[in-house]
Image 1 (spheres, rainbow, N blue to C red):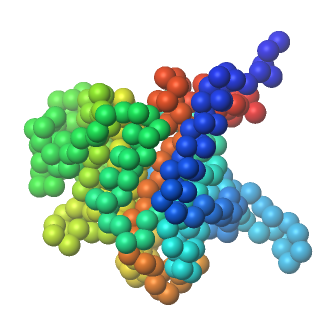
Image 2: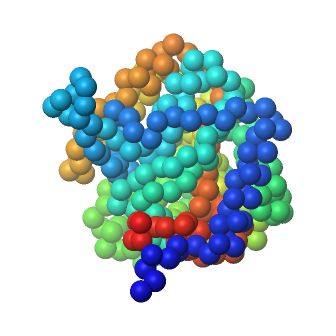
Length: 322
């Protein structure tokens, strides 16, 4: 029986260790402070597409139990540090997402997240490109707006098309059953993007897709020059989504409104309502400096650096062997 053996080879773990050292050197040279924040917190994300792990703390002051969540990312805590005057910061940590397992997913994974005060999303895209060249020794990336990707690969404008037009395109692409039942344009857009566009982009060099629809803003600002889009980007390379970045939303009232919209959507989907993180909202009201932030999957980066095609090959142990 060899079930106790690690899923990654020692050689791959050595590549991983060197990659982490190079990331830390990259940020040290730029005087970006490394921080640590809790992996257990009293609040979780309201995003209906993310499922958190929940546990109970029983101890002094909480004899009846206090619900805690394993964090899907360190974002909320890091923004509180930014509001407290930390300046530019980064973190390499574990993150946890329930219901996710597969070639690119393990419920427990490693994340690099960083925030640059004074940057917008365009400047942060350049720094992400710099990091990828240092770590992967890849060529310079290409850039396409979200709108351009749909026009180029599907012949449809995602910012102006009707729901019926989206349904027609989805049906033509082999998703007729879903298209007939789905009335949320963003669900259809995400379906088309992930299944029809992602496999075709960033194969030879990394590609940055930017200016996502405002309805997919997540925690990004809406563009002041085009209210139809958010100042958000994603990075893809060789079929792998590597990173998701924002020119960060600083308006506490708008953030609270988005939390409420998320919970309305959760109710519609039959999911439990999540209490919004009031610590984050209070921090935003005290003032978040103008900044941009990005989350990058460490395991996926190691997959590319070591020429592995499954996340299980770059983690010492996965959920199935831990």
